[in-house]
Length: 227
Image (tube, rainbow, N blue to C red):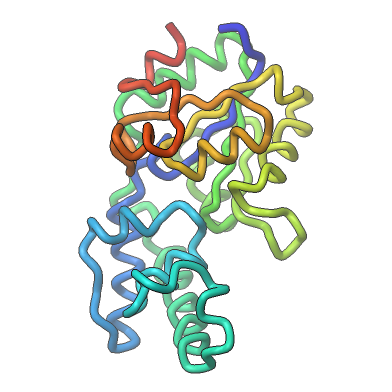
């Protein structure tokens, strides 16, 4: 292992959070009289934070991809605000109902830790959820964990801000670290931070999708990261 630190994505990389995310999305939609979404839709919608997740989950989300796309539409913006409030309320109470680490994740993290590798988690998931899930599932295996914090001027992925902040806290530079994630957002994030990216195949995106979006190093099992 010729690196000093690993920066991990969270959803689809370390934790299988999909069912709990889908349940929160559908609670919010149903609570506002909107049609719910199958889990296959939610799988496609995640990756760019819950603000954009709820834009995509709304009717017409196949056209409206980000919050910018609905700005100026007062009715949609008001609905989005209600959906966000309901999502946050439900997910805060239920984010551990079905969520579990993927097979092999805990042993992989333990091997990295025992080898003296520093570990960070950087996610577009809401920071409140990251701060709840990381201690619950990984204890002290993770040195630095950060969720979306644009309110304080830290750009979310694929901007490099969160990753560079985490590396600074770890005391390492981008050339001393690798990035591990499951999506196109992660590939772009690693490139923007000047880091190599390892794409995992057990998460929310297929091999074909990842290769189409520039993946060059792919692994099928967590233990491949530490062999």
